[in-house]
Structures are given as structure tokens and as C-alpha cells.
Amino acid sequence: MGAPVTRQSYGLEQFFASLAGRQGLRILDLGGACQENITHISSLGHRVSSEDFLRTLENVFGEGDFYLNQEREDLVERFTSEVLDFPPSHFDGVLVWDTLQYLSPKLLEMTLHQLNTLMQHGALMLSFFHTDEKATTAPMLSFRIQDSKTLTLASRGVRKPAQFFNNRALERLFEEYKSTKFFLTRDNLREVIVKR
Amino acid sequence: MSTLPGRNYEPEFSRSSATIGKSVVVKGQILSREDLVVDGEVEGTVELQENRLTVGPNGKLMASVKAREIVVLGTVHGNVEASEKIEIRKDAKLVGDIKTMRIVIEDGAYFKGSIDIIKPEVAKPAPAKSAPQQPTQQSMAASASDQKK
Image (cartoon, rainbow over all chains, first blue to last red; front, side, top):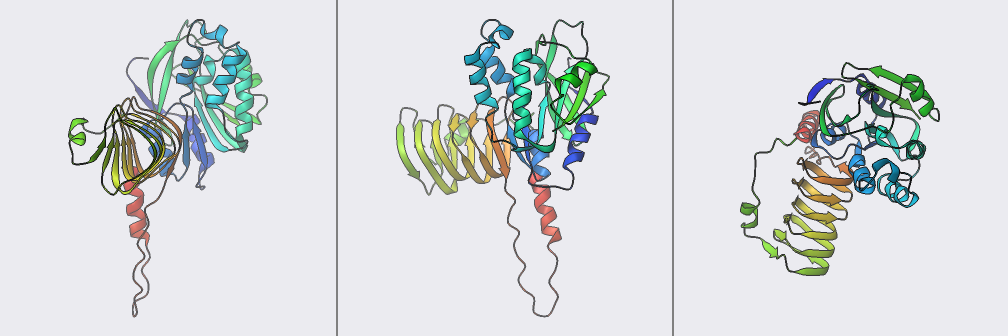
């Protein structure tokens, strides 16, 4: 992805539709703090928690073999304590964006289980997955919320995803969650909404 | 993506403020009734209820902070409360929970924590003796639009 792209997001629309009519909810944004997301979420009357998941991932596992490091228990423990240290059922919605695809299978399973415990029953989580299975690298993206159904996507670097997922694989991945819904987009991304 | 016009640090630094220089280390409580620039290290608490705190590019705060307005160019670890506004500038780092009325985060800034936007208090209309009380809808709407800026 070269220049930033602004487009409609059905996943985002579903996410915010689930929050409609309520205020004072807790939203976790794992894309790192940015003005647009904070402004939009707080203008709806919600509290936002920001974590730069990819940055911490790079900081903790980036030296040497990125995916092999994700097998090291000491690093995994450091990583989860840095980014996922919240009380159970703390969040009413989680924006994980495209971060999950840069996790090795074991760390991914652990992270999804941890996210599950951090979410309220009925809360939604929005994630994105690249669909081009032949790609050797994929752009790591920043996601900026323009309004409740529009996103601006921009590249913040490239990295080979740990694995690619088709719909069936995604259903298996999120089987701990109550429901899974997909939206296939024109920019080779699959938007996935899962419900706790 | 910041929409702020490019602003330099120098003019802010040269304003008439009390300054903790970059070679100064303070451990304890700071209470100030004037604007304060911290370019050194502070560990403890910092309170400037009616004034502005600037954490300079060399500034390192391991402290809970309360001020009317806070501008961060350096590093802050601790919970922060700005009754009017907080700005986290490019290359600044803030780890802690924020409570404020307005927030500006520039691209390149690092923030980890939660953000609580406090709504401005709506002034209660004086009780009218003869006329019925007016609804406060107009001032509520003004507050909401102000938050979106």
C-alpha cells in the first residue's frame, strides 16, 4: 500500500453500531494512540485505552528471529504483561486491527484467549487479515477512524505475516468466541468481527 | 496526523515561567502558582492547578501530575490530569492514565494508557422568578462541538 487510502469499513460500522445508544464504555485500541481514533471514540462518550501492540511486538521479539523469539517463554511473559495486563471483563469493545497476523500460532492462541477474558460478554472485537496468500510480505497498517463507518489506512512498514487465514481457518481461530462475521474488501483485506 | 501548525519548542521555553533545568533532579512534591517548565527529572507529584506545565524534551517525570494545561515534549510516567488541555508532541512519551477536557496527540508521540474526556461543566441558569426555566440544550451542544475540535 502506497499512499493512505480512505474507504468505508463494514466491520467498523458493525463495531460502532453495537455501541450505539450507550455511553461511558471502555474501548481498547491496540493500534497505538492517534488523534482521530481518540477524538472519535471519546466524542461518542466512551473511554479509550491505547496500546501500540505492533510496536511492543517489535520491541520484545524484534531482535533476531522475530517468530522464533515468540516461542521464548520469558519474552512471551514480558509481552503479555506489557500489552494485555487488564482486569477481566474490562472492555466493551476491542480494536485489534491487523496485529494478530504477526503472531506465531502459539502466541496467537494465548493472545486470543487473553483478549477473550478482557472482554465483556457480548462485546465485539474488530480485526483485519490480509487475504493474498502468495504475498511474501504484507504492509503493517495504521487505521485512523474518520467516522463510524470510514477508515483511513496507511502503511507503517512491512513484515511477513506468521500465517494466512481463509474463512474456515478464521472460524477455527475464533472458535472460543460466540460468533464470527467476515467482510471481504477490495484491498485484499478480510475484516472480521467476533463477538465474545 | 496532526492538523496543528508547526510550533517550535523555543518560544514556549522562553516564556516567563519557573524552570527546572536539565541537570536538576527533584524528588518530592512540587506545588506551583505560576507556569512551570520541567527539563530535568522529577519523581513524586506535580500540581499547578491554575497554570501550565511544560515537560521539555529532556524532561523526565515519574510523577502524578495535575495542571490546567500540560504540554509534553519529553517523558512522563504517571497519571495526568489537565483540567483544560493536554498536548503530547511528536517524540514525546507518556505512560499513564489521562483525564482531561481536550487532548492533542501528534504523530510520532507514544502514549500508553487510558483517556477519560471530562465534559465541561454547564453553567446553571439563574432561577428566573417570572419566566419558566430555559432548557440547557444550547450550551450542551456547544460543549459537544468544542470536544470534537
